[in-house]
Image 1 (tube, one colour):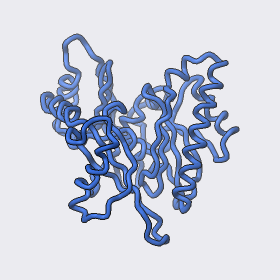
Image 2 (tube, helix red, strand yellow):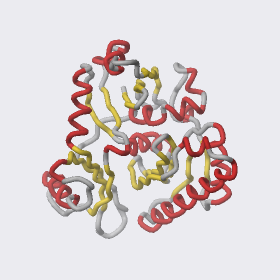
Image 3 (cartoon, helix red, strand yellow):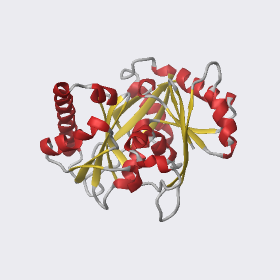
Length: 301
């Protein structure tokens, strides 16, 4: 089960992963903020949260995702070495940071060269407060994740064999572009255009927003091509969008050199148990929660 906290309430969903079949969305729910009542407590009681392995997501403002050169040290010393590298890159003191790392695989056929890694850093206080919130509600929290990896989980299900894929989504925090290959995250970029800006823009302003998005995509995909020339991108996929935001697909298709396609979550999830998930609006709302619920434990570096 994934639980995503918002200012106006919490989203939760349960996804069951099955061998040789689409992941099944068992249910989704939204618990609104209501006076002094804690929605986590209400959720815990309604769905018997103690039965689930639960994960939650940090908001973009609560963490930094940084690309760093992988230090040449024994594996057990990796996080210490990464912490040293990050000391001048964070906007807070490194001693106050909780840090994890994500490997970026290199071309197996290339000569040995410098490797990159992603480092995720969040303030200790943010992590401790989130852990305490779930502990108070008696919800067993097994992982605190980030939206970039939730999107990676969905992107991995869309990948054609032997090729990479770019995926672009929008929510209230802005745009998020990821590129995955072999189920691994190779690129993650934030785009400073929110879904609300797109939805509320007058037609004259919409073109300017689309131009800004297109320019950011061109720069990011060109950078990716230069850095990871051994990966062939099959296409850019647009996460579910509603209303005038849906016009973005045709605009990008006319202005980018790569194939641009929209997709619905029914192409990667079995959503038969939640009929409302057929709507683009609901798919957009639960996009990251569903991606987070796809998480499965991997070897920690």
